[in-house]
Amino acid sequence: MGQKIIFLSYRRGDSPGYVKSLEKELEAHYGPGSVFRDVKDIAGGAKWKQVIENNLRNAAALLLIIGPRWDAIWCDRIDDEVNYVEYELNFAHNLGVPVIPITLDGAYISNDTDLKTVSWLRENQTYDMSDKQGRWENDFKGLIALLENIPGINNVKSKVRPERLGIDQHTTPQPKKHTGKIKTVLATLGAVFVALFLIGIFVGEPESKAPQKDTAVVSPGFDCNQASTQIERIICANDEISSIDGQMGLAYEQLAGQLDQARYEKLKTDQIAWLKKRDGKIRNSCVQSGLLNTGCVVDIYEKRIDRLRQMANDTQSALVQNYPDLTGTWRSNTFRTIYLVEQSSTDKIKISGYAEGEANFIENMPNKIQVELYGLGQGEFSVSNSSDKIIGTMNYYDGTVEHDTLVKIR
Image (cartoon, rainbow, N blue to C red; front, side, top):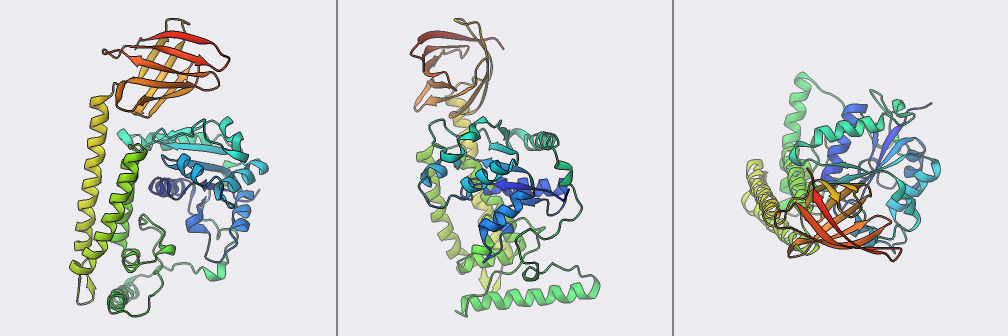
């Protein structure tokens, strides 16, 4: 049997930072070229359907990355003629490729979301990953253990993988290693090229294509193949700035995952405004005599990253302060059934045990939660001031209405 790959399916506007981190660690474990990600692996001008189909035919597994925005993006694009994710999922499903939904920070697909032709996805067991509270390393180990149970996964392991299927090898030159004097000469020429490149940008010379980057460098928070502005090209041309741009993208995604829709929209507007100010600051403060002061640019980014992280900490502190922590084991006094509750934020409460479900606090009402037990019914409950009792009513889909009291036992 030929070598297999792991296929990553995701929404670019959802959690690109997580996806890049996952890709990097999977390739560190299984070997270079063992992971397919469309942004990196579909060359310009390639027929995307053909590339996707070829790689799915050689996939050992498809990992569907579901972040905090996946559900909303799916609903926004439900009527689009071309739905890449839907196409990938159905093609993999028809081939019998195992599809594993990977949820990030407790994200989930709402039961109200119309999944159209991929409704079968709800039958697949999800696996949650997070970088909060130092979880990422253990979560990744758990993912590897899950993948190791898939038939044919051993065919992914390889020291080197040939060029991705569907990409013309003649148009994608491989980077060469240089040592000694050759490396020194190339570094000098590279510095001269960057200087000329920046001078050309700021005196209005024709725009150049984004330079090719070493794949070992941390990627920026956007696709350099689609860089459309002068500043984006500068970012892509400088490894250190590319890396810190990617760090800012991660900080932004982590904060966005904690916010409700209204506050997320406000954050997005604020981030767009910051990007415009960033461009002006780089032009006016960080370029002298056509040369870029990298430290100046990094300082601009570090201030923004600190601000995003502070906002994330403040948001998390507000959640802890204003909303009770329901994490633990609960027993129903009415039915004597046991439920296990996991809570990561006000709108991400997972329920398992006797029944599977989810819950969220009602906005501005820290002691009121809405509960849904999958396939059974929905209800509204109140949390006691001591946070050890939950009292309310379930309206079951068969028409039954039941009052219940849940007591926290540990």
